[in-house]
Length: 120
Image 1 (tube, rainbow, N blue to C red):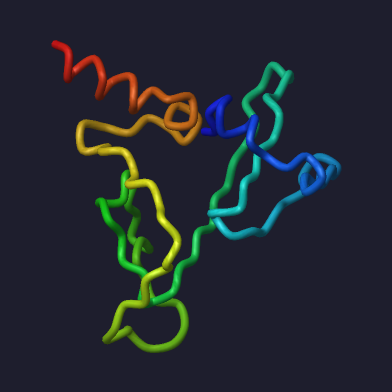
Image 2: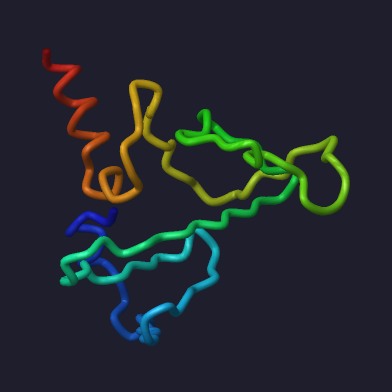
């Protein structure tokens, strides 16, 4: 989810479009600005997210849809020390009241729900 104000500040000379045929994938850092246009097809577009992090990366909030493989170590040893990225990072939304989908979160439903609860 990128605000119009943030989008206006992007350097258009650095934007790279990576078109691909149906079934293409991207592999990138989660902090890389990325998107795909809305699907115009009548059937839903499948989405598979394989997310990997370093063993020394610890979440700020609980996983919204944990599975038996959430936080599973796939290579190496458990970390004894945490390394922090020096760049600022927005705190994830509070999904403790429920999580519907990544699309709903990107559309701002989590923020809208939190705002409506604050003003109730």
